Image (cartoon, rainbow, N blue to C red; front, side, top):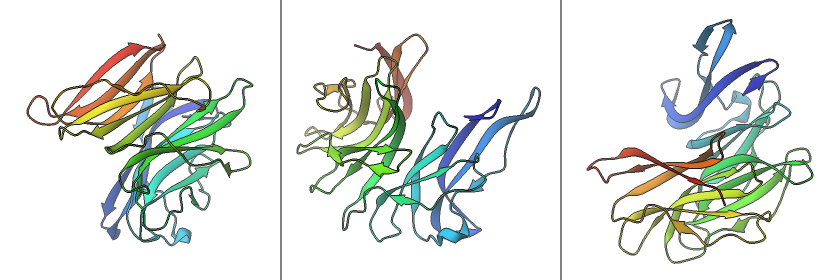
Length: 255
């Protein structure tokens, strides 16, 4: 992420610390260059300031930076007795954070594992898209929504999957041709986890037929998507096909 003329690599995670026991909180730190060729890690910082008065389980963060330099973090929290997706932002590189915004605000449902990305439309306007899984329809399905980062207006919450299977752990990104991709893992009828993906080229009006890219009898789950400079789309995931959970990766060319 960029702070003026310098860059930093940010990492966010959920953890229980002795300074705030019995709760999981979101922490972050960043790798930066305070002086030329002197790269180092910052101290870790608890995301929730005391003014939020949060208690409960805050976990599974996803973090991005928009083109104006604002840093955004989405995560799930059970502060309201069930899990919802929350969002906050910092316009000063983490010095202060806005009051969290409840994206889902569902009662008696579990909305978890958000993935956040910035989307640029064909007129160069910037939006934020968030994908997550929810059991609001009785079993876990993938949902997504759009947020205007200027007005903080949220669009409709839309289902990506609707079937009898458990669809979880989504990851979302936009490729350089404008397509929006979502990948996730699915618990199949054969009691294995498979990694699927789909994409849209028309802002979510329609989605491609989901593709099972792992297609074996093992546990393949928690995917993550990215695109490299040469246009290839990469997916990274965890699998137990070698006997215990290991990290695997594969790539393909975008349509």
